[in-house]
Each structure stands twice: as structure tokens, then as C-alpha cells.
Image (cartoon, rainbow, N blue to C red; front, side, top):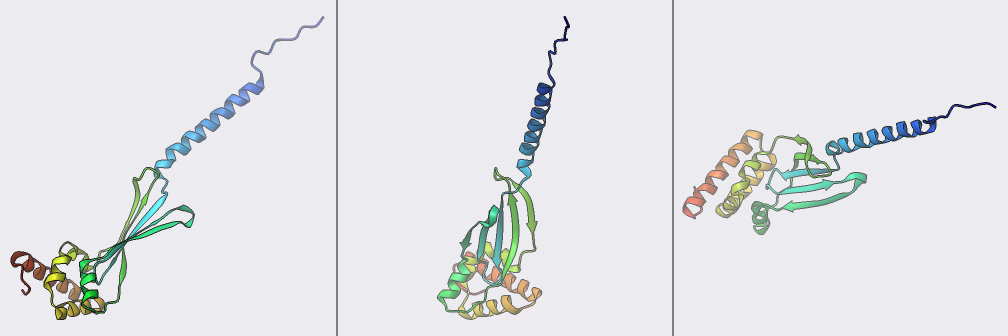
Length: 170
């Protein structure tokens, strides 16, 4: 008669336990990386001539939603007065967001001069004459950066005068 030792811990189960540990560790690592993984990209652009803004969302696999457009009061007034303008779209910023909506990355560029005028564009559009608007559009389309800054300053002054008095003119 021969005796054989009893094997209480077969190797097969140890391998399963080790494999289960690796799978759990990989799953935890994946879950921890999810908050930093961007799933959508929101791009904001502005027309440097009229101040109209657009937002476009890009999702994985090439899907795109938008654009969502915020037409400026200045553009509406230009169309109503039949003043021609050529848009000059510029990217303001791009924000990458994760699954829960938190921003994971910001990409920014410098804003055009008209961006500072956005809070009073409605008042400027109401206060300016057609001649002033035509000159403003000409400067915003083909003027130097300094000329554009000066035009925006003058437009802001015109808008604030309109806010104070309710009348056109500076």
C-alpha cells in the first residue's frame, strides 16, 4: 500500500486568484483614468467684425452637434440697414470635457477687439447711424489692431452715451 499526500491548495485555484487580482487591478486603473478622459470638445468662435458667436461640440467617432449661434445685435442692425460685412471668424477657446462634464483641458486664444464691446453691442447698434456703422465695419474688416481698438473705444463711448441719455450722438 502506498500513501499519497493530500493537496489542499491546488495550483489551479492559485492561478485563478492571481488572474482575478489582475483583472480587478486593471478595472480599477480604468475607472480611475475615466475622469481625465475627454469625451467631448466644445469650440467657441467669434466673428471679429460683428461680435456674433458660435459654439460647436465635437464628440468621439467624428460626431458633431451644433453650431449654436448667438447672433449679435450689431449683425442684426447691419442686415436691417443692408450694410455689407464679411465675417472674420476666430477661435476664442476650446474646452475638453469628461464623462461627468468637468473640464479636462482649456485651449485659449486672444480675443478680437470687438469681444470687449459685446456687453453694449445692442446699445451701440441702436445709437449708431448707418454712416457710423459703415465706418465701423470697414475698420473692423481691414484696419490695423490699433485702429480696431480705437473704433471699439469710440463705439463703447457712443453706447454709454446712449445708455445715459437715450439719444444718438456723442
